[in-house]
Image (cartoon, rainbow, N blue to C red; front, side, top):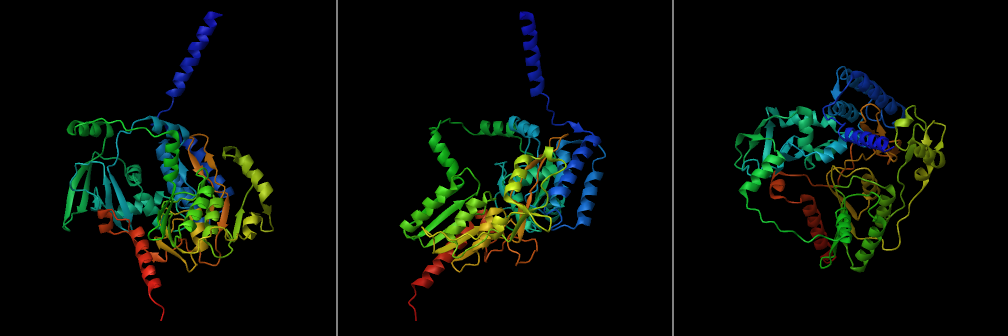
Length: 506
């Protein structure tokens, strides 16, 4: 018996060891495996995605599906397969339909030290790339605010024209794509994925005197470069006091939602990075607008530039504190399919179908309509309702539920939208329930929105976001100096408004 237990222990431990080491990042999947996953990916999109042909015709989408299939004739690694899927997925023109790594790959990345990083982060708009950060801190040439005109012989336009083909967005909205590329670290990651890594990069740039110059940079290697930096700089280890669990939780919450008030100037700033659940936003909104009323705040700046959306319940509550009229979430909200052929690969499919059974009705058009949100009008809140001037800061990361909030109040005289167009589509989007689909062979996941929402059928379906009433675009000088140009524009408007209201009436 002891011998059997001993052998069993060895088998279990050996099995665990094999399990831990069974993931190989360079593993290649056969064309048969890739084709199986691709077929499921393609069929589920055709069967259940409500906006598959909203901005891309069926003929064009079939062309892209066929293109993707042609790329799978040889064995590919998971990143190579994801690259094909991301290219095809972006052609749907749906910002909620994106490709994600397998769980095994994600765990591998979380537990493996990063060996190499493209060193530059960029701010990108139109055909302009400006350095915002350089991991090689001793580089005195490619500093913040430096305009980059080419990398390894490829012009800025050539680079951007290639990279945007792998980023999903609502409609034809390049503002979101450029903002995604501007998010810290994203440009280098996608650039390396699309063009591969180089030992050296020749970078053409324009220096502070306007002269065109070229320099050569290397990849940033954290292990080597951090050790080298430590050898140069004297190290003085100071252990800061560790925040308590309650303080850490508060810091996490404040990173997502925070109200700051300038009581002397009767102005408040609300930073709102998400409408997601888990941030106790209902209580935050109630406390915030109570404080705004208590301290007689007349001007409120709401910053949703980095707000990717979340719960419609939360965005609707914020809208009710600002809106001066009854409003609906949208004109129509429906799904095209309840049961799916490959439902076993769809996350929470049983509960999603249960949701549709209880909350939607199949109408004569064959679609499953969510009638409550199509018919229900939400009323403005009476208690602590804000009637002063509201300035909403938007940009390419303003997405999904953020677009609903902005669309509902933009026409009010006391609301001004400042910045750039929202990343979310003004006409509508495909979202609401968005389960992951896990492909069986590779484990690669993609998001599959199940409902199509038309926010406002009276506006053109031109594939653009909500347009700002006061445009505030990036400039090279603003990037160089680190100026928050959108907030500066809001403060400028507040100052003008105060001057205008202080003049004696004729």
